[in-house]
Figure 1: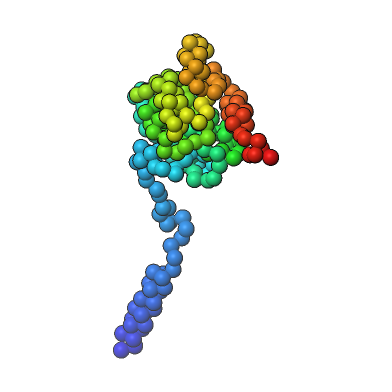
Figure 2: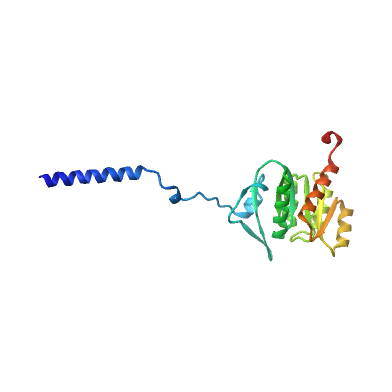
Length: 209
């Protein structure tokens, strides 16, 4: 009889211990960390999602642009002057994003080909377009021509990115209405300074006071 009573107490004690253990929170290290999954094309084409200061991804999304791959380095919705970079080379995009981040006051949105760049310029109304001339789907000169011929986008200044051998293209781009150009390879800091100079030229006296 005494043995059965002891066994009953032991069983009840184990049940109470088990119940307390289940009520305790899991150790932080064992909790699954929440993850966000995006289709990269949806992320890039989502209005209001921009590349700039803010959230840094450990595993950067990647999407293919023909034979090249572009990485989306940073995603942010922080306020700032919106700059559109139309460029299909990952290293160039990354350099420009970092340079504009250091300058502060800018958000960078990106497009990996001319067609997407044209659409994003119309949707996002950036204060500046940084436009590579050699792009898939639609060349930069065609993008420049369309933007400068559209009453909704003709006011947006364009800074061209060109290779040193593209002198004729640079001349044509300037004739089409581009505001300035930078030859590759370039210093990212120079691009930021030229962008700031273009924006200063576009300010009215009332805005500068």
